[in-house]
Length: 395
Image 1 (cartoon, one colour):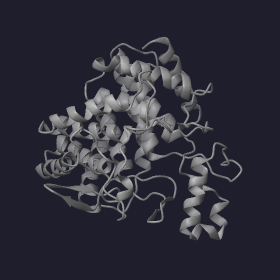
Image 2 (image 1 turned 90 degrees about the horizontal axis):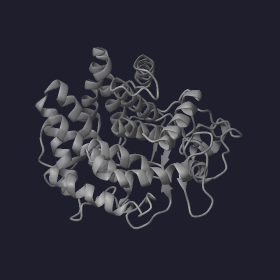
Image 3 (image 1 turned 180 degrees about the horizontal axis):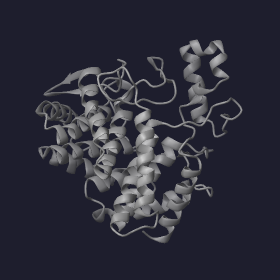
Image 4 (image 1 turned 45 degrees about the horizontal axis):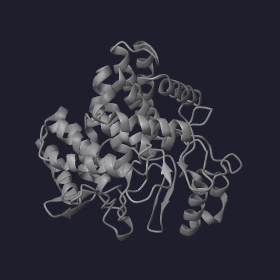
């Protein structure tokens, strides 16, 4: 890992640890203690406007409006994944970010924190977000409403933790998440397969990357349980997603008319999930889909100088997820060494343009005024995990 990347990661790591991994989120506006005492909280349009105002404003009103810094389960999962990568690097002799014993302590702490955040009352272990979220006018996700997204990231992180610590109690909890996917999520039939819903709340049931994350959870379960039903159900969700892949290798976000865009990091999520299914089950039926999707990914979402684009046909807003996810996906697909030049250019651009002198990363760069607010889950946790992947791959 060259000095620029190492120094960047050291600053980010120090910042996140000093904050105890707590922070604000682009969507946490309804955690405002001010908003919660206003009658506006009962009106869907007011909730939507309030959240969007916080998300879009380059000025941070959170202190003034009493929004606390909190832990977010997906953010904690990303930090845990990152520390697991650092542990593997330390075992390989690279202790630039701590000795094995020190990193193992962090892994155990974050594992217990993540387990303490799981949501009770469902068929298996599941996780949600630490804020109410109004998704357009269609539906309201209340705080701690379980989603397949938060659950999938948590499951993968806990699997990585188990592989290091061999704590059987952790594995038992992880395996129960398959029951959450099969019993608590809706399914929408599509051709020869189906799509898992985004959440336990109906209304956002045909998001491709979310469905694939359900398959990812079942794939991890199959690895340890050898439950053939879990493999079969995962295979049907992957099949539906691959049948929805465009001929050029791209995917739209979802099947609702307003979800027809094609973007960078959700493409990365799709590829990561399909590859995870193949690795965990031994079923390589979808390799052609992965190759087509990967070729489209690297050809359409990055400019020649490494600038990461949000959409296939539009650069702005440049979201921190985009440079972070390409590193993680390249690692999962074992394409890291084949794409070293692209990854280095993208990481150079990101550190130069999106990292604050305090160590944290910005959420988005826009053509006009950009937000430089520190978001722990959306920005810092994603880049922490990405840089940890980069460090392990580079050593």
